[in-house]
Length: 292
Length: 283
Image (cartoon, rainbow over all chains, first blue to last red; front, side):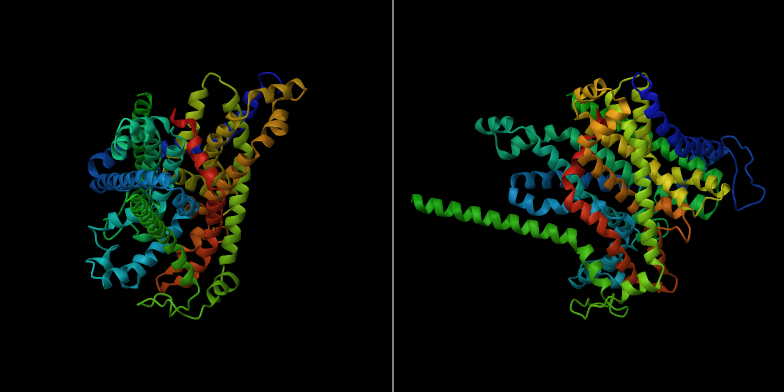
C-alpha cells in the first residue's frame, strides 16, 4: 500500500493526530474555558458561560495585565537589541581572528544549552545582595546599587535582561558567525580594491548580507524573551512588587495561584494571539529584507 | 629604514594579537564564571558557602553531593529527568521523522498550512500549553505520572524534529529513494534502510537536542509532575525553603544537571548551528 500515494497520509497522520490530541484539542478547550467563569477559588464560579466578559475585563479593566504586557515588550527589546548588536560585532571579530575563533567557539553554545532555571539560580548566587560574589566585589569597588541589583525596581528589568544576555548572546554570535562564514569574499575584496575602508565595506556589504540571519535570530529571540518565565521566576519571582512581573508570570499567578482558570484562559488566548500577530509582521519584514 | 618598518609592523601584529588574546580570555571568563563558581560552592560547607568576602581557598568536601543524592531525594529526581527526557525524545523522534520525510519529499494541498501549523506550536507560551492540560490531566488523574509529562515533552519537541530533520532529508538526493523503490522497497523501507542511515549524524544530534530540551524544561514539569515524578529542574528550586536556602545541595545537583548541556555544547556545536539555521521556516 505504501508504494503508491498512501504513504503520505500513512506517515503524516500519526503525528498530526498526536499533536491534535496534546495541543489542538486542549487549546480549543481553553478557548471555551475563556468564555466561562471557572475558578477553583469560589464554589459559585463552576464554569458558567459568561460570553466575552473575561476579555472585556482583561483589555479594559485590568491595568496590571496590560502593564505586564508592556513590561514583557520592554524586556524583549532589552534582550534582542543588545544581543543582536553584540552578536554582530563578536561574529565579525571571530571571523577576522581565526585563533580567537578556535579558542572561543566551543564555549559559545554552552550557556544556551543549560537549564534556564539553573541559570537563574546561579545568577542569584552571583547577584543577591551582600552574599553575591559579583555584587560583593561590585560594591567593594564602589559601584552604586551593587547589592540591590535584583531588589531595585528600576534596575531589575536590566538585571534580568543581563542574565538573558549571558545565556543567549553567545548563541546569537554563533548563528551570525555561521552566516558570516558562508558569505563570499569576492565583493568585499572588490570594495577594498576600490579603496573602500574596512568600516565602510562592513556597513555597505557585510551587514546587508547578514540581514536575513539577523532578522531570523531576532524573531526567534523575541518570541522566547516575550515568553520568559523560568529565569525571572527564580531570580525575582516577579518582584520587587510587580517590577519584573512579565505577562507569563502574571498569567501563572492568575491561573495557578488565584485558581482563576476562566480568566487565566482568556489571558492565555490574548497573549498567544499577540505573539502570533507580531511574529507574522516580523516574518513579513524578514521576507521583504531577503527579497531586496 | 626598511627593517625598522618591518619590525614595527611585527610589533603591531604582536600587540594586536595580545589584544585579541585578552578579549578572548575576558569573554571566556564571563561565560565560565557562573558555572565554575557554582561548582566551587558545591564543594563548600554550609557555613562557608556564601561567606563574604568569598573564600577562594578552602578544604573541598563532597558532603553536599552525598547529602543531596544519597541521603536526600535528588538522585531520584535526576533519574526522573533521564527517564522523561529519553522516553519523550524517543517518542518525538518516532512520530516526527516520518512527518519530516513527507514534508521533505512531497508537496500536496495543505502542505504549507500543515508545516507552518506544526511550527506555530513553538510560539505558544508554556502557560498556553500548561493551563488546559493541567485541568485535563487532573480530571484524568494523570498529574504526577510519567506518562503525562512524557507525552507533553514529546509533543513540544515534535515541531523541532520535523523542522530540523526536514533540513537533513532535503540534503539527501531523491534518486536514492527512487532507486530503493525500484528495488522493491516501499516508502517506509526506503526511509528506514536508505535515507535514515545517510542522515544518521543529523538524526543523532536531533535526538540529543530533544533530550537536552526535555532535560532542561521547567514550567510544564512544574505544573504536570508531582513529588514522585518531578525532574531535577523542579526539585532544585524547592531547596530555597522558608527556613533557608541550601546552596550547597542546589549547586551540587545543578552541577550534575548541567553536564548534558555542557557536553552537548562542546562536542556538537557545529551541528547545533546548522540545525537551527537550516530551518526553512523563514522562506
